[in-house]
Image (tube, rainbow, N blue to C red; front, side, top):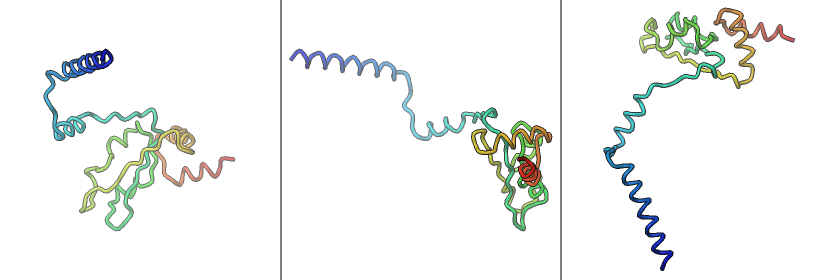
Length: 138
């Protein structure tokens, strides 16, 4: 009987503490929770990103600007990346810009090698330059 009374009192204390902590907070529905999640800014950890790969859909509708940047490797803090971040307004595709950025982290194979090459080349180079550099490396 004594155990029952102790457990009952402990349960009541826990219940009252939880009730007090929730008091004053309005109940939230799913729409409010979703709105709060989308309104938070996305934090990009540039220290973890080695480089960014610019990728365009290469077909008949790809505009000249997108085709020029397709396959380019760019450092994440490069100024051109801020100007040409897809969907960019200069795209002439009737369906709109379909380009994407692929973020490559430092823990991926070969990313530090490409990152150091990009730093030597001013922050941006194409796939052929990277392939030539890898073939020249013993």
